[in-house]
Image (cartoon, rainbow, N blue to C red):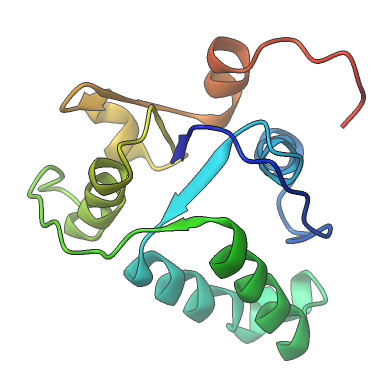
Length: 145
């Protein structure tokens, strides 16, 4: 989820994002957009990136993962995670993403998850994939990311 803008830069991070998601992370890194995340989303991310096959595939050490999580915690909007919604009956775990967007007062949810994309929006917050976000929400940029 992304909202307002930031005025910071962060180190290069999360090498396993490619193409559109990587471009979105670079926009976040240079302060064009903001990232919002909840404690449960952080926990899920940590579990996933600690899977041996993920660590091997992307050559991630435990130290790398710790650094990525620290950057996210420092520079992202970490919402309390107190809102509960029942918006995605086919995949209840996705409800935390929508709840995070509501708590962060996000302008848009960016996801590749089909259960979320099928919804299209929730409480006026559009749900789009990375390519659609880049074409519809980010103005053309004069510099190379």
